[in-house]
Length: 294
Ligand code: L34
Image 1 (tube, protein in one colour):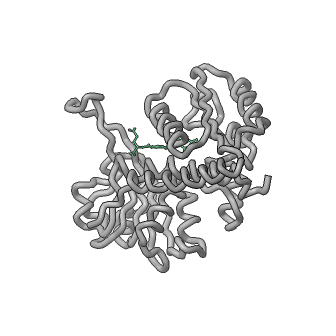
Image 2 (cartoon, rainbow, N blue to C red):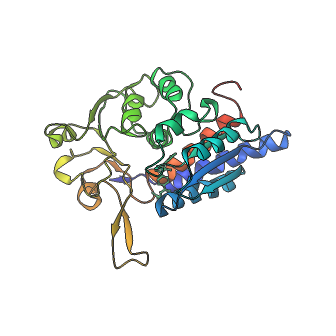
């Protein structure tokens, strides 16, 4: 069993980006600038956004954090998005999800200018991604592709089972792994809450992408010997023995599943840091106007 060290790989990639930014600066070019909008005080969201801001520093990017209370109106939030859309110094921005109940995530996503949508959540980017056109790839699936590529894990002809059909992970992951590309050419099965006999599906998988959002959901009996297991879950589980009162757990029963795997990602230190570094890669692309040419 080999552990896929997402944390170490993310550090390596950030180092590579920092070198690129040095070159850009040396040539008098514009320093990439990412803005993040954080609404409310959900501690998990705050932690993820902190990681994003810190990663910007490590890459040599400029970053702007826009923080607002949970009682912000949708109109006010739209005003902020408009300002960011128009601000020529901002290359790309994200609005951290989830948003408070009274704000419609879809409206917000649609308001972001596709050329600045470094999360790759806008339907224009999703559609371009699905058709294999240049697009910002959603950060978590993009990070997983990077892990598979950098660990030289063969995907061509493999059977990949994705568990979970969210717009930001499961669904785009299923599309990306089935396309004709260096990391791709999988036969993909997209499973979800209505799948009959899920264990029978996952047991046939050469590669399992677990993106359900429930700790210990994928157990050893659901995994084939030699499978590659990518754990997207980041669940906070109460744990009185920890200072913070909780520990992070993935969607996979790591202890039980790891001995059967050829490769497995840990939580924390797996997909999470790769999600953040993918956002940095998208921001660099945005500042170079690589996707849209403007
Ligand atoms: N708009 N909303 C928007 N874009 C995103 O890309 C996200 N996502 C998901 C939630 N909402 C979003 C993230 O940023 C999940 N996510 C994310 C980002 C970073 C980490 C986890 C999830 C991360 O850094 N995880 C660390 C542990 C962090 C901790 O200590 O809590 C890890 O090692 O897994």
